[in-house]
Amino acid sequence: MEAAPAVLTFSPSSSSPAGPRPCRVLAGPAPRRARALAAPHPPRAVASSRAPLVVSSPPPPPAASGTPATTPAHAKVDRSGRFCSPRAARELALMISYAACLEGADVVRLFDRRISARREPGYVFDKACLLSYNHMSFGGGPLEVGTEEEAEKLTSQNEMDSANEAEVLSAPPKLVYNSFVLRLTRELLVAVASGWNKHVDILDKIIPQTWKDEPVARILELCILHIAMAEMTSKGTPHKVVINEAVDLAKRFCDGGAPRVINGCLRTFVKDHVDNTGTSQAAESKA
Image 1: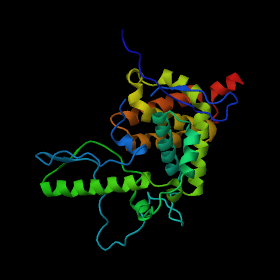
Image 2: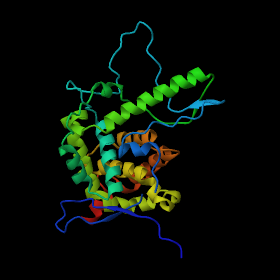
Image 3: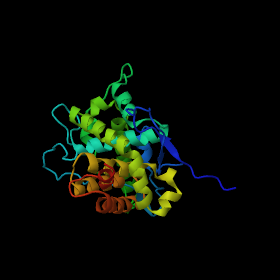
Image 4: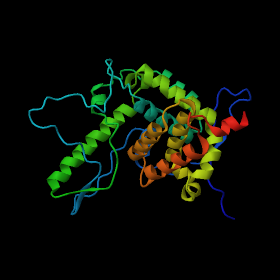
């Protein structure tokens, strides 16, 4: 007898009078880079230095000589030295959603638990890590280089970037994100939880069959879709902004053709299930 497909569950709503209800997640193994969202960041994979020499995720080009060093625009930190951009909130929401699916936990309760968690004695966080952290560091195909020296240089840069990301993503959220980001993240997660069951039914109609055949391998991609759909229907953010942000999250944390698929799924969602004001048509029809 053929085994039933794996289905993950988690309780999306902690405020329901009937108590939390397990619900389906159209989502085994996670993509390599996705594991950074739930566990300390592993070093990024680098191919052997034997010819042809290849490395992944090349660093940005250095500033021209004589140009004064400035804070990178992508860092987007406030005067307190914490992330302050909506992109940081979406990334944090993805981190919590992904971890909640893996643990079978409630997304809002998991967020609150992480925010209120006590720091380990003696823990010190270097805020300089935030200035080096790049929200726009996307994956991609291998990069060919001409010499072993170039390969070693890029490999070293990859390792430093990975260590920096691990430090940022594993740090207590209050040290990394300002109050605006934390508030927006919680609002997104509440919206994700309240719309989860409805959006699962919609996703079942718009995601490709290959994703339905391997839902447990697509936890991360489906979390990105849930966050984007929840933001469209609850926050009133322009559709184009939400879709672009979701595609960028997929470029950053997913593998393969996920960004293209997510773009197509969200455009279908907007066309068929959301009106021009950002209100879910399905919700209105039931009202």
